Image 1 (cartoon, rainbow, N blue to C red):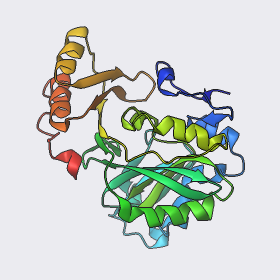
Image 2 (cartoon, rainbow, N blue to C red):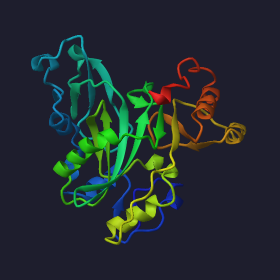
Image 3 (tube, rainbow, N blue to C red):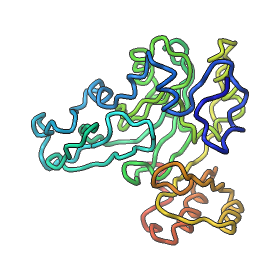
Image 4 (cartoon, one colour):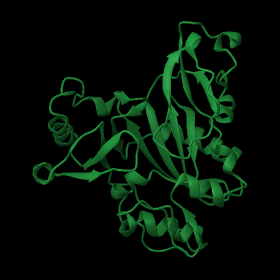
Length: 290
């Protein structure tokens, strides 16, 4: 069986082909994993993390949130990705939005951790850290392959508690060390810099073959070009000359393209050029490190 849910143009990355059906998209992961699909319920995830949270329609002030404090509002379940419809609003202005919920707003580093798991036991981690600057709660940039071993006991405990019986790849996004999203798939946009041993190890794991943990990932940077931006061949060539690859992204709402690079300074310079200076004073070369 092939991987299920691969975006067009990314097929060559997903090799070798597993014998076991393996989800790449959230929709496929939800369908293929009925025993564990409850992890996609972000309201339950927030409550499990000890956060004050409730469906839209329950006033945050009734749960002790100050009216002027800002809270997150987002869909309870979102299989479309990229923090769709997520935003921060004052506690006294939460909309009565069907299918939505609110939770107290977290502060601290925004992280994304992939984990290869066998029967609910974590075997291998790959961590990434988001930039402080965001577009509609979505980090502008990600540094892939950072050392976040201090989070691994927390992530491991969460996996053992919620994913007993699950074998494969999962992802946990956190802010300040508190879970905000869980996925029964990995960070697909980051796989380009996971190194040549990652895919064979993942496939061996799900097919029940000998699993050899991949080495630490080489890493790199992923930068999102949000907004309506037209990118021509000359801009593609200029970016490539700086060591930056531009991949168009027609499928993610509000994102025109993805920049992939080893040098964050070069990537952010290309981003400024593509945006025509509109945000050149906003995106700084230090943002990815925050």
